[in-house]
Image 1: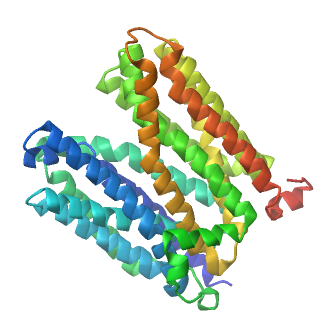
Image 2 (image 1 turned 90 degrees about the horizontal axis):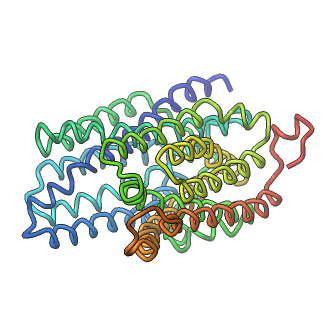
Image 3 (image 1 turned 90 degrees about the vertical axis):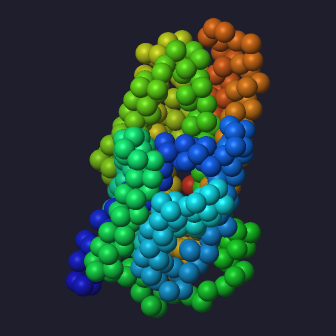
Length: 418
């Protein structure tokens, strides 16, 4: 057993760095991709069509390939899948650096969608090397790395884009290349040969991968829980700037700072507080508390009559970050070691397809209830109220699922019941 501790010590920092750089490189290009697309487009309508294609294609490729990478990691181990995806991310950014036209940019977005699906193998890696005591903490660190990358990426991309339109892609390619070399020499394998299983296209395709969820009722219920919460999150991201600009007259600075504040506060909660909360409440109560708090935050957004009240809802929202790591912790202890990749792939695939539809629903609701409104009205908050309803539904499903989950060793030691 002693040889596994150094592996864990080397593996967790690499996974966190990988996830941080994945999200950072994704965020780096957000401020500059529209300008690059516009550079190759005949007019704004043409540019908008191509931007829509790129956003949709990214999510579709994640939907298709998350189960594939998860199944491959169950067969060949986490290390080769993660390293291959990191190398692919570097190649993708080089495509963006040298792309001579829109078709090449679209091809780069397709590759990016495939490589971003490595979150499945990364989560499976964390599941492999975590114990009952630190599982929620480790997944909280993953969430924190994700949040920090999302904060830093757009800010850095905007600064680099001011220097040269393609400089963010050059920096992203360099960071991915360095990450590959770092992992090549440092990252140990986490999946023992005895826990591997043959690759099967039946399990690796998006539809077939759902069978991995149906085998475990608790996992299936928690996947439905995450689907509801991701639907709410996708709508929030779509209408945030529209809502605050219309109601509070916020500009780019205020919107940027508000989103950064939410991301930073959530990262602190997930990186620092999650382990303490889980030790005190247990995983099940932590999930339900996080979903309840998030629903209250969405109600606060929708009812906020001023920018100050909206900021207050942001502070409440940050605490909701405890639910996702706790859900991941329950899921990973509910399935076998040779199923972690497949289950994580199915989870990621379901979330990817939800992210395709969530912005459309949010935009439609916002447009439907704000047409002609010139001042504050609860009508403008309808998308947030809808999101709160999604989160309450997520909580009800979670109650059903958590009752069917295996008892947590942590809870058993403290004499509590789920």
